[in-house]
Image (cartoon, one colour):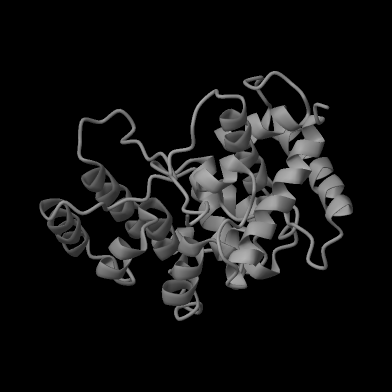
Length: 280
């Protein structure tokens, strides 16, 4: 019998979390019987438990939690999103454009990957190397650092508006930066810590799928946020977990659900493989 879209979403969230727990407990492969989840990489239900997020938290965010320009480091971290590269760059405050470009040049010369493909980073139509475009973007942000630092009393939404208005950022990537910054002050005290999220292409499609709408049907952002709040409430009632999912985790789940459904319906394949199958 065909499952309803909401049931498939709930099943996906439960199974993805079960995979994380089985793997963390040292159980042998396969951690799931689902062939799609065995074969392809999906983010964890809670973004804070993803490997890249944990690296960033351990090496940059937590040691420098009191640095007033941690926000800038989180921008660099998410646009690169690859721990090997970040480890070579080192904590980028104060900003050193020359050092950044030298690291990127050296990695390219050695045939090393410099970016995590999880996020699609464009050069805004400029015919320019990605690392040069990013160096320009980071340098512009650094020059404006005095007006871009989060302040006491900011909400996640208000800071998203300020930072997201800068050239080279935009709504989705700014929200990814905020998802890191919300675990340190001043944003950890934001009134909308539990309820804020901003949509991206995947989470818009994922919400459409969960609501049984046309997959590419457009959204007005405020309407998407209202429906996300209802979805957050519904999911948390179904899950009954001690720590309920905040809105940005639900947004993340919808993005991953879109990937799951695309694979299930053979509308496309996720970009990254996952070694979650049998060892035989």
